[in-house]
Length: 286
Image 1 (cartoon, rainbow, N blue to C red):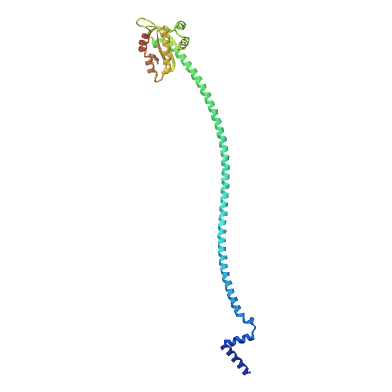
Image 2: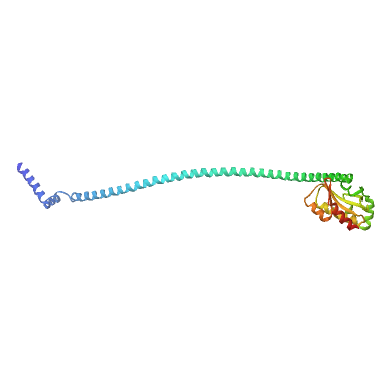
């Protein structure tokens, strides 16, 4: 037994020292498929290593994809949030637009109501102005009539220093004579004189003199013009006359206009421009 063990050990030692012999022994003892196992195992190991590398790369890619997806999810969530906020904003704008539309409609109704109210006010104002104008005209007429009576009643207070026997003129006599020398239009104009007085000159030849008066609460240039024109007509009809305007007050241009047209002014108990009007008007008539 010791010899056999020695032989085996020697054989093993010989095989370890002789690779070629070892290969020949293995080829004789083992099938071809078994001999190919180390190569296949090595290939399998390389394949597994390659697969592991691919798996690692795939894991990295998957991780990157996961990170990207997480980022995309965050972006999408942000977009969703922004869309929600935008939707809320749009809804708010829509509500605001509806409220604005309602306010505009209400404002339009209010403006229409105001427009109608303004139209009514304008109508009332026009009516009021017309009424005031009628009242003013009527008041002016009343004041004019009162002033006419005042000048006729107190003629001596104004003209007594220059005339005597002052009274209202005999209009029938005047118009009877005027129709023979004036046109019908001129006679109608003369008949519209506010007041015609007659008297005698207090000094000199005591000639008969007529005063053609235009009377108004507030004298204006038109009153001066009418008095001058009607005095001209009465002079042409054969009645020596002096135009006079009388009132409670006068516009600024009245005095200059009266001076230019030789018209006397009876105002506030006084008499202005009589001498100039007397000299020029009676000289024109003589």
